[in-house]
Length: 111
Image 1: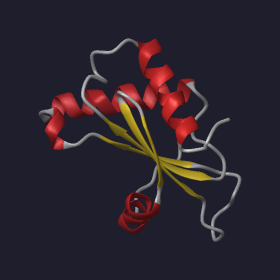
Image 2: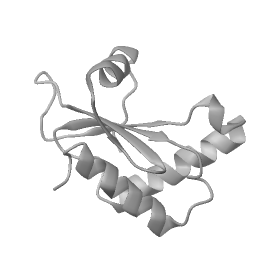
Image 3: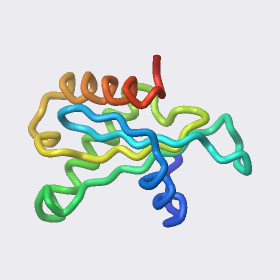
Image 4: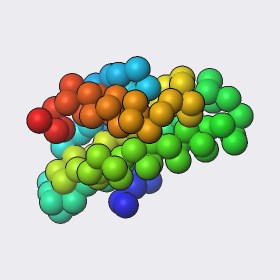
């Protein structure tokens, strides 16, 4: 899975990205820059310090990573940030997948 690593790309995603929210996930998306291959997509997984200690945040990111894989990510033509919200670590797999799809629809990544 291609991930976003450059801080400039992350900053532009948070500044200019299309937002889609749901109960457990915030999705920020931005079209792939023309300098890169438009048929590839990249993903960023974020869990802020408000969620808890490092062990807890890493679990949240693992859960989001698995949900991303199960719903078809990364999405060609988009850079996407998946930001964990409270409850993602205790929710069921089906709830997280449903929430992620809802947020992806709101940000116009999937129909």
